[in-house]
Length: 580
Ligand code: AMP
Image (tube, rainbow, N blue to C red; front, side, top):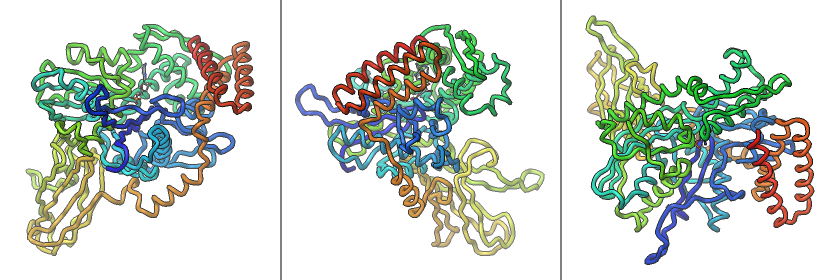
């Protein structure tokens, strides 16, 4: 790997970038991963993109603040659509989820370059363990659009386990098993990790790609809507701006309920302000189906790792949503004890990714550590077979690499033809745990020419090779022949060919990105603007005046003064927001 050893947590809600510091030998400056701050001095950069009236692209907090007031030109949570064909329209412009992620990566890369004073060209990027091949490819495409070479994709819970594993290194004698419970903004991952003598072995990894803190927010927002007699069907067709008011009230409630068991919420709907009291019990009721969805992968991971809950030595919480007491209580109920709290749930993944970058570069200080990971899902092909009554059953899933196999892995399986005189075999590749392929995720297909013969007289050998980044290569050969057909799962939406990549990159280069140094000022103004829209009367007037004052300070172009006044303005806004 060239340049600094970088790890990136490209999150649904927030993204972080970290660097591995080799440290100075012989003194207290130990080698470790370190988080890099953005231009506002924060290590968490919201994964948000917005376009302002001048056509400037805002990234990070300045964009996140516009989520409610400028919902039509702002987007968040696009990680959930990575690898899909969804197009996001922001005003007159359109973006793919990869392009939006590329903008976040570009911003993080710039922050790191300013911080380190050197170019950042390579990075280890974390992805949810449950990201499929298409989503992993989309992440690599996003990095390429941001001119970053992905040295390795690392599974998020694995990265967290690395950070945690190294954090407790030396404190624990003998082997230990840890369960990493990672509930982020948009995904839920669970991993069982075993550590012994510098070996970190991921025993099992499962999860749910569509379950995270944002679903909890949605559930609360819908519960608030129900209190106003807005049924589910109507909720779905609410104007995005109106819905955004519910969502931001729900988000505030959710955070408040992490610190207290009862909170007040205010929602603007049809030109009226509605006030509610929301209790812990209301919260529990609203999110009960989500808690149920958490239980299943937990059980599956433990079963795959052949572990009883009581045999676990540590339970580690990762991801912002594990701050919810309801999530902690669920963990305590599932495992009969309280989890560890000495690893910051927001930071572990980025720190682990940077450590993984150092492991890959074989940094001398990490020579003793070895890491193995697993495939979080089963990979296989669609086949047809005859049942006991002689009927041909189509679309049956035939697994080749089973879930939780140690990676890199390579496995092969043989199949024969079912019809006479077939001239080709259309091999479809799937990922999932269901018996029929229609219930699994299709990853791609490959057409293999075969000699025409009677049914069952031609055999093909299918080899699946799954690399350490979780990317699959499929190699098919007709038994006894030298000819191979290889598929690196091309042809899906996320796999951009070079021409497409160049085109998408050119589109990004045409954008006018708001100057990095001004982003913190812009973020505070956007936040004030959001509060202005939410408030009324004298409160609103005060905010208007404060905005005018800060705008005048900005005109002065005196950077020291601007910074000082910005900090004061932010502190004042914190006070206003805490009283909402
Ligand atoms: P991550 O993707 O790990 O950054 O997690 C982001 C998610 O954590 C979002 O859904 C946030 O709403 C949620 N979150 C962060 N802090 C809290 C908190 N104090 N209470 C409840 N949820 C939180």
